[in-house]
Image (cartoon, rainbow, N blue to C red; front, side, top):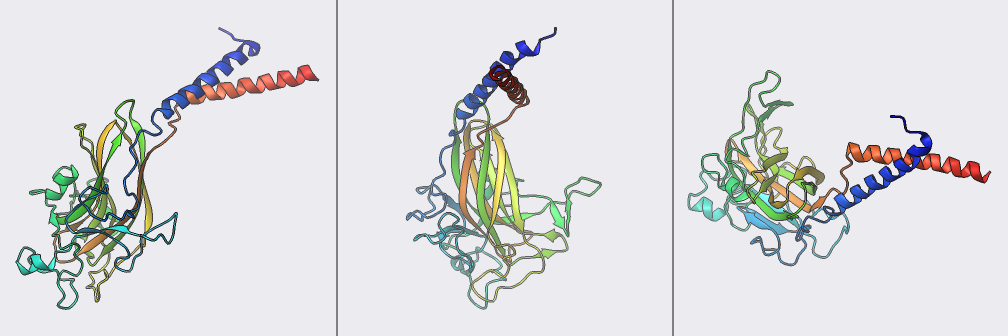
Length: 326
C-alpha cells in the first residue's frame, strides 16, 4: 500500500506526538521513584552508624573529617562547616589484640602502638565463605567476595584459556544504606554515584593483588538480585606504615558510578573493604557523596522511529507553509 507524502505528513505528526507523549508518560512515572539517600555526604551532626542517620556500620567504621591525611570530597561546597566522610578499615582494635581475638597482632601497626588503624574500637568481622558474617549483613551470597585474582595485568577468571583463580577473603568491614525503588511500574534504570578512595598497607604477592574495596547491591525484597563490584585493590610491595597514616594511597578521591536496571523493591547498597589471604596488614576505604537516582529517559527504537517520522512530517509542513506564503 502506497501512502503519498501529503497523507504521510499528518500521520507522521501524530506518530511523533504519540511517541513523545509515551516517553514523557513512561519516564515521568519513574523519574522520582527512588527514595532520597539520607545523609549522602555524611555531614549530618548525627555521626552514629546505627541507622538513625541513614547509615549502618559493620566492623571498624566511623564518620569523621580528615583521615589518613585525606580530606572529605566535597564537590558542591569545598569548605562546609561539618565536612565529614565515611571511613572503613579492616584493622583490629587494641582491646581485641590484647585479649587474643585478633591473632596475630597487625604487622602494620607502627612501633608498639597497636590498633592504630582501627575505628570506634569495633573489630572487623569474618568475611570467609564458611562463616560469611559480613556477606550476610550486606545481603550477599557466601562466595560474594571470592573474586578472581589479578596477577600483574591479567585477571584469572577462567576466560580466554586462563585458569579460574579466586581470592580468599578473611575479614572485612562495611557501611550500608537501604534505598527503595517505587513499588509500582516497570523496572527502573537506576544510577548510583559516589566518590571513593582506597587506602592500604598491603600489597601484591605471588598470588597477585590481595585486599580490595567494593560497592555492593542486594535486593532485600526477595527478587534475588546480588552483586559485588570491586573498586580498587592492593598493588605493589607491602609497606609498613611509619605513622598514623596508611602507607599507600595510590589514587586520591575519584568518582565512581553504576547504572543498573532494577525492579521495584528495597535494596541494600554497601561500601566496604576486605582482607584477602591473610589478616596481618590493614586496608581502608573512604566514601563520600553517595546518590541514587532514576535515569530519566530510556530511548526505545520504536519511540525513536516515531520521533524521526514526526520530524520528517514537520519539515514537510514547514516547506509547504513557506511555498504558500511566497
